[in-house]
Length: 212
Image 1 (spheres, rainbow, N blue to C red):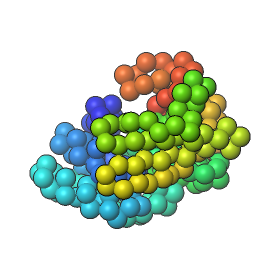
Image 2: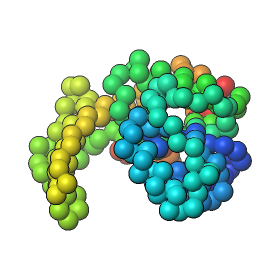
Image 3: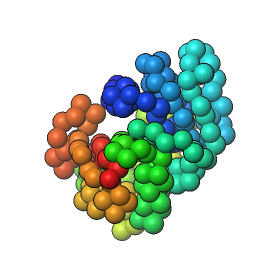
């Protein structure tokens, strides 16, 4: 995704990517010339990422580490920490969110930036998808079960390779505006999409915050 690659190049140094997954962001970032420390809690995801990095010829620019985004195994200090693909939504409550945000802050040089994206569902999206199996792509079905009281999304996926379920927890953008300063950040920008359009009460929000 060019947005994160652009942010990495603008930072001009090593990048820590939290919840690196299979490298959908980290590998293009490494291909662009940046060195990436990728952290993920899944051994399987890291194995896939390592293989793809080797195939892309960027294995030496990608340092993969097993760990929790709330307690990343990183001693280095960097100018940029990222957490793409809504991965902060795996955090259950404000205590976990603050723990993760403060951990990210601890990895940054003074003035360094944290960049991440999250979402808040619209009423229309909930009504259109709640409790229904929908084809996400050929052979792959997805079901969303929303709980407005708990602000959770239980997402189930099934296909030829099996099935899986995960739960995500969302909060409104106003809450992120409060949590970031509490964790020691100054909010620099909140976009409505990766093209940097201004946020205007949509579902997606993309955040850039600077360590105070």
